[in-house]
Image (cartoon, rainbow, N blue to C red; front, side, top):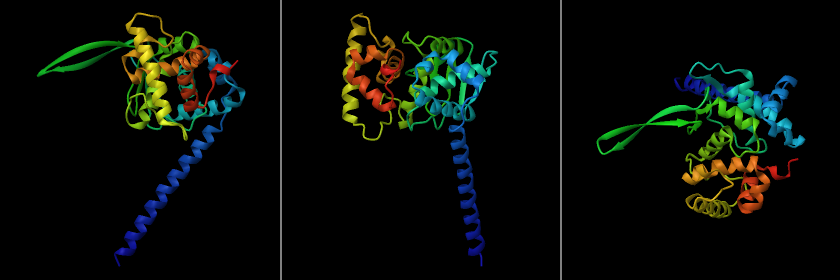
Length: 271
């Protein structure tokens, strides 16, 4: 007699779980199919001018992802900053550019923290039994599974200047993509059919050349900060991929091809 009620409880729980998941999938599909308003579109084009070069065929997908991002993510202003709708749109548009033509998504991200400008963090380093407190000034920070922390002054500048090779939003969200594997190490989840051997060869060869240039004091196409580790090289390479695509394709064709395959984008051909 007791098995029947228990079976009903299990069945009802399963139906409730299925219904909630169905509702979430319906909402997600609706958001992805919803275009921006004319006002929102004007804001993104003004604050993120690289979008003007985005092929028209990709713009509906970008707008849908921006809507999904804004629904999923909560923005918090720090140090007295009030996060406006324009700030949200600028950050969301830059973040979604990385995944505009990709099945990848920032599934675990729920929070973006925004400072007015560069911010300071405190890190404790252990030296035996002694903990040393170090203060670092940052423009952005990305934590596995979130949150992402950004300086608005630098996020704004990065969006407005789409050819200087510096973009803190793209950099930090490249780390978010990298972390989807569970590790931030410069090896993201590759596209179906994309060979790991080809990815590793292109990334390591380009990283070693970049490291040698930085250590010898020579000029580099990819920001020198990329020499601090494979994960930072991956993030800076993606920034260069979007902001200096023709130069990257010419200087590091194998790296460009791997990033193009990963993101299913070819910004060197955008006009």
